[in-house]
Length: 368
Image 1 (tube, one colour):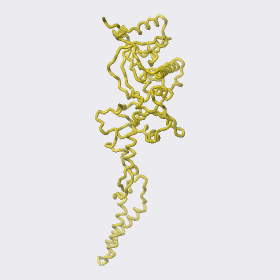
Image 2 (image 1 turned 45 degrees about the vertical axis):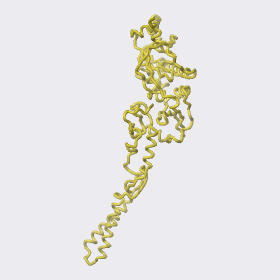
Image 3 (image 1 turned 30 degrees about the horizontal axis):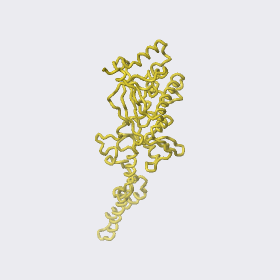
Image 4 (image 1 turned 120 degrees about the vertical axis):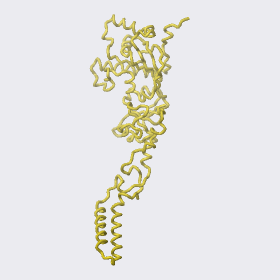
């Protein structure tokens, strides 16, 4: 018996708990209302960066990257399936046309055309390529994004599409913290007890992640680097010896490596010999150089003009010359001081061979 069209484009089983399903649908619904508010009510100033992508509304993947921490830490499975996806779980981006732009005849025509699984399988349908973030129960369209809100306003429950899966870190790998100190108040996400990202929109992300199984903690752990150090790291240029940047997320989301912060602290606390001139917080009194120079001059003159019979005088003049010369050059050349590396000028924050991000890189993935 030949396979039916519906069997070749089945409805996907999301496999979500009721709580997770509600949270995903709420995020989708809120984006729908936000886009309507910004595009139809001229309220862009109220929604800020959540609206204002290249198309006006943000595309699903871009929106999730802004809202959900470590969204880009997941990999997309290149193998696709044809399926009908639930409209209530799909992020729309109606930048080109909306339901209100169409008369009833056009509405009927598009409903018939865009909801046809036969046309999808025959590739006669305008492309609909959706990324399924399976763990979160969300679909983010790449192509076919305008039809999502159209289907939503028509009350159509499912959309035929070509679907690619994208994974997301499991809840046991993610931690959420509200970091508050004096006037500072932000929400941070930690992945694998190592990588830190700011949660730019906690009112969007926290309910979703709570439903996913990640609780919001109110106290930053003492075993982690101090929040002040983490915050300052966001302003550094990414690199192997910088805490800022993850090799798997280069050029994308600002991500702090707490292992690099710890390694840098240990490296800076190591003791090393140095000269007085090399110390950051030491200033050599110019009087020493002046007196040393005078002593050298007096010693040279005394050695030159005194008779050879004045042996004791010449010895004293030679001692004056030697001691004065030593007083002048010792602060610059003799490493007679031992102090922590952080107190010494011209030292790297962290040696490359000691950088956790550099060690044994060779194609290894850091995130998962």
